[in-house]
Amino acid sequence: MAGVQPEKDVKVSLGLAEEILHSMGAGVIFRDYVWFQLRLPKKPVSSLLIKTKVPAEIFPVITKVTCSMDTESLCLLSLHDNKYLRYFKGHHDRAVSLSLCSRTDCFISGSLGRTVLMWDQRAEKCQGLLRVQGRPATAYDDQGIVFTIAYGGYIRMFDARKYEKGPFEIFYVGGDMSDANVVRFSNNGRLMLLTTSDGYIHVLDSFHGTLLSTYKVTPASSVSTLEAAFSPDGMFFLSQDDFTGFYYWVGSGDGSVHAWSVRSGKEVTSWLSNDMEPPVFKWALGSLMFAKGSSKLSFWIPDLSKLASFAGRK
Image 1 (cartoon, rainbow, N blue to C red):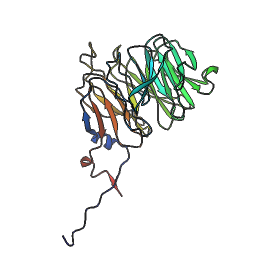
Image 2 (image 1 turned 30 degrees about the vertical axis):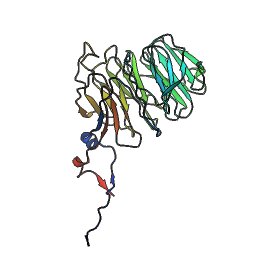
Image 3 (image 1 turned 90 degrees about the vertical axis):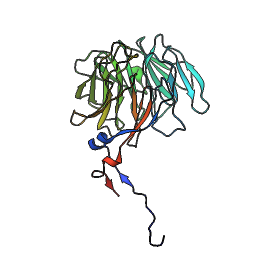
């Protein structure tokens, strides 16, 4: 019709804030998987890896390297044709930690056999070995220059180029001597978090080792892992409560996912869940979205209808 102007797309600029977190909900849910784990990639890939074997415990899987959780072997999976390209054997007990270097083909893994192995995706044999005195949690920083191994109440920092010389820093986490579950760097590398089997989440300054805050949540069961993940800006992180159901046989807790503020140390919001298995979750870098995986795969985004008074338009 004459005089009618065509509708224009309105661009909305949002930064992650507490109001955004309060508004978030599941934008899409996939229900066709019985068990799986996932980790969103930092770089775009053609697809995500979905693992459907029943694992010994929930474990975040990297887009190229996946751990076979019912054995001590590691496997290299091609996303292009869904074929295993290589098997990595070296652990003598179940692998419980895996971290991929974002800048090279290297990765590290830790097992209940109290070993941490260094690998190159192009070779089947491990490239190095470190012995530890407990269940290890491992992580590379975003630059791939430093990796960390957490166990026994301490976080040990290694130079990836000369790890054989031992840690260049050792950080104390305030007397929590329970088993390490996961250790994570924030995207800018300035912060680390460590979760433990007693239900503690410790946030530290990754440069100086200063313990910034400690959070107490429902402990994970002996067959589960307490997951936590930083938001892209490092100002918030997600954590889980433990679960009741056939996976957590003796369980307690309601299965909620909680969002915490690193700055204030307080809980921002939480989302109830009726999932029967503990989830894993990962923020998508550069997007206001996180993925949550358990018996269902869901992608969580802000509800813009709740943010009319908050969103800045441009």
